Image 1: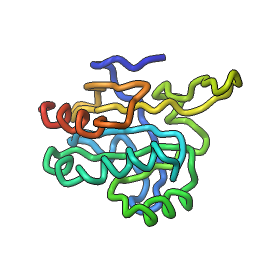
Image 2: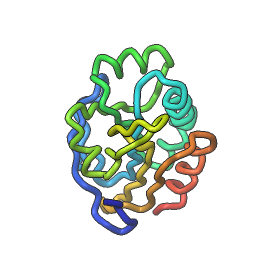
Image 3: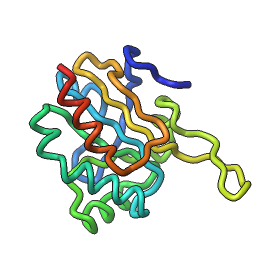
Length: 155
């Protein structure tokens, strides 16, 4: 299932290590970036989290909340955030409910072995609670900047 721009964003409930529980309703009236990533403290995921952190003030100026989501535990998120001085909210989805709702829990393949995993994907949700833009199979380099530009352009 792919969420197309203009469709209602699925609701979610994500506990975090430092930001309380995050829900779609908690972002009401603001723009929201949900970026899904495979695993805390891995190379690409760290680079992506640092890129969003570096632009945190710009996202705040654009009235946009940024939340990174993985299956990692709240404790793992706390270690990841502290180790890399991350300034973005990290939501824990160990049961994969948000992953399923956003269609990012997918079959992957590595060296011929198939397994289920998280597709690196980002969703920009407008103030109206609808998907404004979606990026799938994200390449990390330059991605946070592209999402920021889209958030700034969104009313």
